[in-house]
Image (cartoon, rainbow, N blue to C red; front, side, top):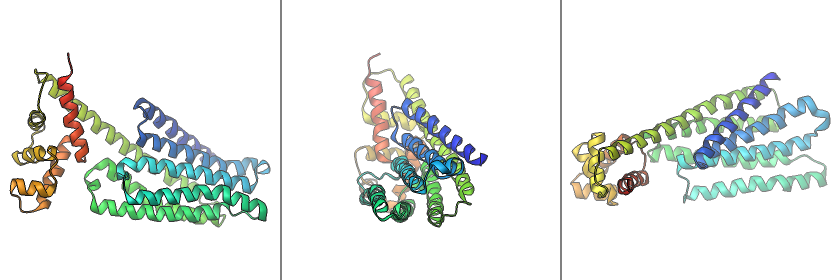
Length: 312
């Protein structure tokens, strides 16, 4: 039982630590989501495993099921918020499925509480987990699609988040089934897996923060080497190219990306036969800039330009 107290304390520490980081970064949604996930996990350990063991006479099975469902809802909300940036869910059709299934899971809690109270049967967790397992299956399907169709595998922090979440989902599904069968002997192993996975998430967060720090250093170095207060976007790209050792082809690609050209348009402009060649150069360019998408590239150039134009 001391192990359960250790896990509760560890998850609560993760919650407080990342909440403080999130507040310091003006409520960074991704890190805030990870903090919320650990808060839900802390509540789950306490309500599902610690309270029944020590205060079982004061807590009915019915109340534990309600508490477990609510705490897992908090965990799921946190993990979706945490992976929002890594999966780029905004505007995606899959997001609608998430919202529908997650809303159904939340709505099932008060609905099954009422039904359970009227019929004197406990069906809170069975209904809740059936809906939640459906959400997990949809979520995992989307993860596999993103791995094979997007550039996440070229971005280490996002790749760690994706792979870690992919491994956790079948573990969560298995534990959901075990919980429905009222087998509590595997709780310790389950929390140990979540504890290890938390360190993978923390590693991903650390890599991301280090990349942002490197970008800040790049901007400061460029500022210190520039005397004029006004500069064009092309001049910024040229200086960035000199600083980060772009190849001539990468420099040309960078200018066309900033003009809003798609990979196909870049092929035409630079007389390149294959879009895969362009993708390779774009990936190489983004890697040198410590970014992973075109919006981030636009923001990097824009931030440097605005920094030049600020009065001393």
